[in-house]
Image (cartoon, rainbow, N blue to C red; front, side, top):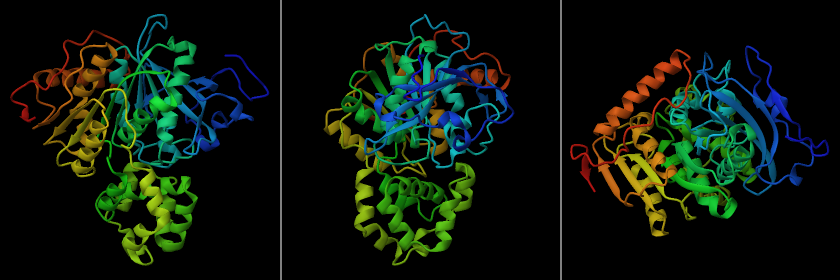
Length: 453
């Protein structure tokens, strides 16, 4: 790419190999250039080639780069973000292929949990969610697709903030389409995919796409367990075994909403504020352990009810609820009926808002899965639905179905065997590339798996 010293844009950069990559706040690659606002959304600022590793330890034979690109925050103020772009090993850029934007369930504000850091070889990010989701990303690569994995929380970890995840994901797609080594074009078909916190980010991208990036050929979005109602989730999870999710959500929001930050500093005691400070450097899974059963009501002047009634918090909670815009691409939404983290009623309501506005939604509910397992149990369903959309196959009916388990149809079992073989290749650092065309497309047409429709 060409360089423009006035804008601070530099050309491709091959990252020197080292034992441990720098954390984003110490890595000059993440620094915004001067006069950033003169660049259009999605413009590439700088690039580098990197190595991907499973849990930071097992190097993966995947072609990988990082792109620093121009995007904007919830108030449309220009900023930079990073996306990790991937190709199957040995892929020929001259061959046409689609692009999948995979939004990780970051669920953290600590910089070590950003995908651009956590997925790298040598990353010290134990307990981060993106490291657990790398096999899902590899599943897309094994289909021969290109993948963009944006830091949808931004370089400062603003997890849960309204609209920003959509801006960053869509601008990452723009940057990926313009990045020559991927061999993509402006007409490349693109799909969105994410689970849990990544499902929420995917929902924002789907909702904003028509207004923010109308030129993109977005053919479909998979938003699995997409939170539905973040405010209700915060109240429900507070004081539970999963109170860490509520805490990290609070920590992310206070970074973007100054009035909320002032409100929290005024109403919360020093002990809880110190706990919130721990989220700055703690990965998600250790954070869940540290915050289990911690109840903000016991550390809030006037109690949680008074805090929730404050106008400053009411404005934020209203701003962060998805489902008020209409996605124009078809969507697949999945949710566990007895999910212990995300309430099925919240996702039911989000689906109802979409369908009432005219979005084509296929909604699948699973009776037996837990929250943390659903993304793996339902992998064949999700990736086959994406394959259908990317290949412009016939769109299934917009229905709501409830199954005992999405894992037990005949096609799903074959998909799980494929996934097991893929995991073996990853563990032994074998090339991740298109090995064969998948046989068949999964449908929920196995009578043994269906409960109601």
